[in-house]
Each structure stands twice: as C-alpha cells, then as structure tokens.
Image (tube, rainbow, N blue to C red; front, side):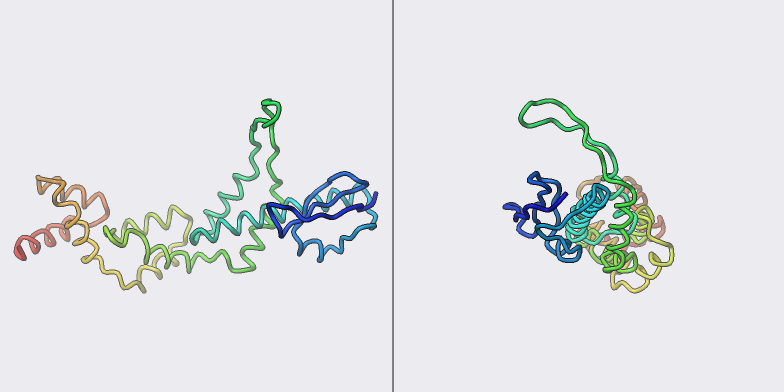
Amino acid sequence: MKVTRITSQQKSPNRVNVFIDGAYRFSLDIFQVSDLGICVGKAYTEEELVQLEEESTFGKLYARALEYTMIRPHSAKEIKDYLWRKTLNKRLRNKTTGELYEKKGVSKKVTERVFDRLLEKKHIDDTAFARWWVENRSQRKGTSFRKLELELRSKGVSSEDVKNALSVTERDEKAELVKMIEKKSRKYDNEQKLIAYLVRQGFSYDVVRDALSESVIDE
C-alpha cells in the first residue's frame, strides 16, 4: 500500500490529508509529516498504517489540549481530567442521514503521551498555576485565603505549592475581607447574617467581627 496523494486541509492549513492507494486514510500536522518521513510513493504495511493513524490521533489531541492550556493556566489534575474525557465514547448524529452512531474515544495510551508532551514543554506546572490562581481569583470582590486554599486543593495542587503561593502573594487577608464587606453589606440588612456569610467564605469569626467594628468606626 502506497501514499498516492498528500493535500493541505482548507480549514486547518497546518494539517494535511494523506491518501493511501487513492483513498483518504488519515491526517497529520505538517511537522509530523516531516518527522515521520511521509511522502508520495512511499509504501507501508497495514500495521504501519495503523501506527500512523495513532500518530494522527495524537497530533489532533495534542493540538486541542494545547489550546485548552492557552485559555488559562490549568493544574495537572485539570489537564488529566480533560484528557480522560477524551477517552469516553460519544453518541453523535450523522448530519446527512440523521442516524445516531457511536464515536470511539481515544486510547489511554495516546492521552498519556499527550500529557507527557505537555509536561515536557512546560505547559503543565502546578507551582506556577497555584501562584496564578491566587493572584487572579476574585480580585475585585475579594476572597479568603482559606477559600483559595480549598479551591487549589480541589484542583489537585499539593499542600506545598498551595502554601508557597499564599506565602508570596501581595494580597492581604484583611484587605480581601474589606472588599467583601463593601460588596455584600448592602445585601444583608442583618449584621449576623452578613457575619455568617463571611464565615462561610472562609474568614474567621473574630476577624470578621473586628473588621466590621472598624468599618463602623470609620463611617
């Protein structure tokens, strides 16, 4: 079986379609074509073509995962969860016939390769992610350090990385509390309800009472 044609994709100029014996078989990005030495006239066995199809799947998933990391920084756990979802089979509808069919998810082997490549290229870094999260989370309305810690832990960030991120930030717990008091005080006509809300947000009861007392004095 031979490569008879290689054509550029219209929607994805960085990808090409590879035709085997006149029929479309798979697509690859232009870097993969070069690295794998694919060219018109080159012959492959069926086993080798199956391996190239896996490379096609890897290239597509890596590109999508890379786009996902570019939306905003993500923790390693978030990336693993994203890749795990790609292993699930999906029920889709054929646009032409309207019939439902099942699209098989990618293999675990491929998702592991994608994760390792992202890690190698430093697109996954829990230390940097934790610092970004602390500096950017709810900047305007404020948030407690306790809540930041819980959020980071839920995203799989280690205790050490959480502790380091909170220790180097210029954000101040009291200033964060003041932001929330200013934002929420009009919503609560009862001080005890406001205190209860702030405590639920991770601030200690004593700190909340002190901050409220100071805000009354300032007024």
